[in-house]
Image (cartoon, rainbow, N blue to C red):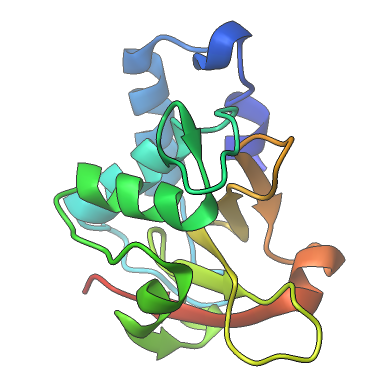
Length: 170
């Protein structure tokens, strides 16, 4: 719960900590990260560190359907924006992002991997994406009227809707 406890939004969508402190806290968090149920290399790549840092930096930003900037994000817009900050190109839609990588077991998820969910009943496919932070937590841009949040992967509400973990970066 480190990321959720440290990254509370401040007024007007700005982070509660100075950028340098948030970077330090993110690096410290990453140094102790482990996969949801499995091992993670003791050193994660700079790309993964940047993805986690950028994702946690968006906590508290508003949800906006079709949003792709810090002014407002939808889930796939958040993933695309965060990956772009790390120099990685992602397609725009959740379905395209799901197809852009390799499906892995949730126990193999590493910080920066994508987690996919289904909200619609009865249908196949995916309609939500989140960014895995490590230690069983992910960043989500969940729905209209809400803000970007950190949620536990093991939370029953999210667990019930989980479809796949996908690795886009090595």
